[in-house]
Image 1 (cartoon, rainbow, N blue to C red):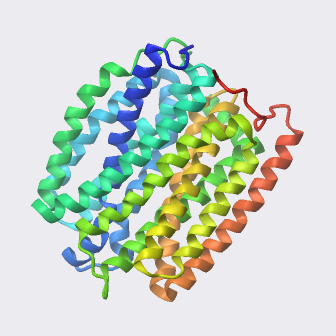
Image 2 (tube, rainbow, N blue to C red):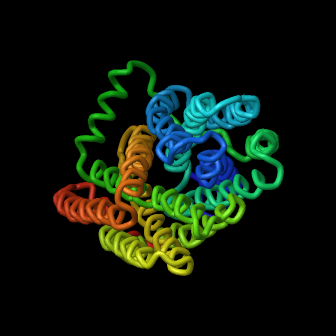
Length: 405
């Protein structure tokens, strides 16, 4: 197993971090452009939301097939295939003529991105020592966050500067350069054992994960968390792009710098687990997210920025804790377990988008806040349910970890 702070650890975590950064740049660089697409294609909020939700929904649908395939051929070939497909699909978007074609290609991009997302944590869980895994997952999620931030800023600033088509082409070229750097850093696996055979074997693994409450409740928490977090940013994007604020895409994209608080909190999540429990961390994260929503209710530019900073810190703290819990606690079929978590995660983001944007269109912020309050209440109930079943489980997945030296 690769030890914490070893040369192989540095190489692998750098490669996976850069890959994660690239993947999430591509996943999110359209999000700040949704108001721009409303004008460009003369469409409604719900119609242009498909440009974002089709990608996250395609990610959710594709995760398990990629994960199952990786059980047979390994994690590294899947990640390499994913990275190669990214610039190819971006080039097709560069020559696409209309909204419908863009939506289809964005969905195909989601299929490609899902390959890397589905197996990266499973790769780490198999190759890294337990102490190294906790720190590495926090760093990996921090790279997710930075990729999301830079991708969104890139989309907004570059579209205002050079136009949408050239922004897409530049992303295709940058993706080619990035994958050439990443390929040598992701080392060949030494601890992967192929699971040859039947779909029934993988189906049984999935059913086992679903029927394991200590895993399934954490997956539900992750999905509900993402359904609120990601779509609050979309709602605020529509608000800030409209009169009287009327921010252009380049300035609107800078709002996503609020993700930086999530980068920090995700990194701190591993340290939290050395001294405290999973359950107290999840409740803390929910409380921080709820505080952020309350601050957003003032609906001034200052309180929107502060509220999004607080919300990001809470949401990524929850995500890092729940995600690493899945990687640690799944005794078999780690890639299908982590992929199933992400299915819940991105499905929550897709479905939550249509719910919260509909609430925004129909009832404004207070209807959005009412919907998110219901979701937060469900999350708290699931945390207590997770605590209850974990106390009865021999897995003891939430026990305190021993600090690394």
